[in-house]
Image (tube, rainbow, N blue to C red):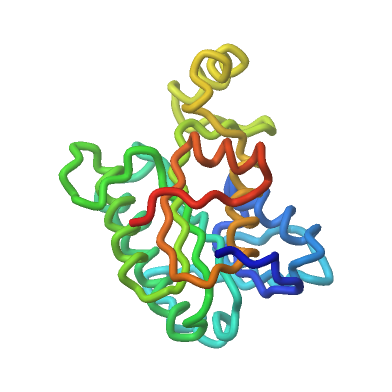
Length: 238
C-alpha cells in the first residue's frame, strides 16, 4: 500500500555531473518535496542553490570519509558509472560494482531506513551468467543492493538513454542512435528513454513511501509508463 509523498525529504545524489545525474539534481532542487540535496562526486558542479550541499570525493573505493555526510538521509539516487569501452574491463567492474557496494555499505550504516534508487542498465544479470561484462557487473551491483538491508531498493534498467542536450558521444553506436533518434523512438519505443525523464522517475520513486519492504526492477517500458503516468509503478518484485 502506497502512502502520499512525504514532504521535505533529504536526498543524496551520486554522480550529479553525469548525463542522468545532472537532471536528477535539477529536478530535486526544484522539487518542493525535497528539503535538501547532498551531491557527492569527483567534479565540481559549478552551481549554487540554497538546498544544495556539494561534497567532493575522489576515492569511491573507500567511502568511509563520507560517513557523517551520509547519516540521517531519507534517500539516494545513485547515478555513478561509466561506458563500456571507455575503461578497461577491470576498471569497469570496479566502477560499476565495487564502488556501488562500498557506497551502499557506508550509506546503510548511517541511513538504515533510506530508499535507494540505482541507475542500472538493460540486460543487467544478477546471476552472473551474461557474456556481457556490463550486464554481469550491473547485476552484481543489483544483487548486493538487494541484500544490503535497505527497506526500499529501486533498480532502473534503461535501454538507450537519449541525452536531450548536445554532448560528445562516447562511441560510434551512440552517435548513430542519436542521429536517428526521431525514427528510433517511434520504431522501438520500449528501447529508448530521455535522460531527463529517467532522472525524474528515479527521484519521484524515492519520494514516496510504502508500508512494505520493496525491491523493484523497472525495465525501460516500465520507466516510460512511470513518466507518462507520473506515478511510480509496482512492478516485478525481486
